[in-house]
Image 1 (tube, one colour):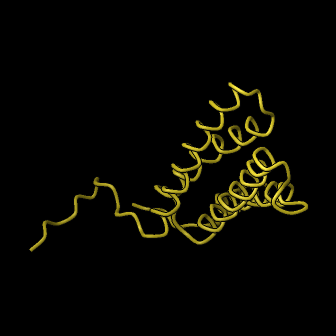
Image 2 (cartoon, helix red, strand yellow):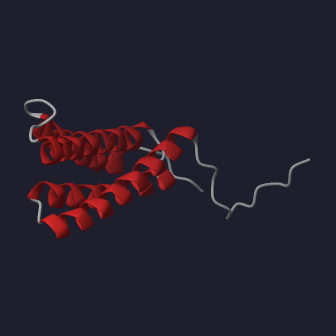
Amino acid sequence: MPAPLNPSSPRPISGRNRLLVAAGALAGAIGVGAAASASHGESRNLSAVASICLAHGPVLVALGLAATGRLFFWSAILLASGTVLFGLDLGVREWLGHGMFTGAAPLGGLLMIAGWLMLIVAAMFGGRAQN
């Protein structure tokens, strides 16, 4: 018989939350790599990728570890999608000389803004308190 859960022990992380933590960790790793690469080549695109990834990676990790409820989850999905789209477009632009498609970076930025705004809504009205 398994031992009873200690109320002070961390709650198990669901599969979708594990994906958010992994996405945040990947964004952090990409951000560090982009920052290092930008410092050697002085690339404006890679500097932007580093800033976006290093800003959003920790937020995705925190949401994956602590957030409950659909609003928090969907705000994280918007943040992650926007980060990926924005970062990929600038990375493709840096290495191939053209973007992924017209408006990809602005769309990624819009998704990130929507994710931050939804996070406000989630903080005010979403999720249930964990005792």
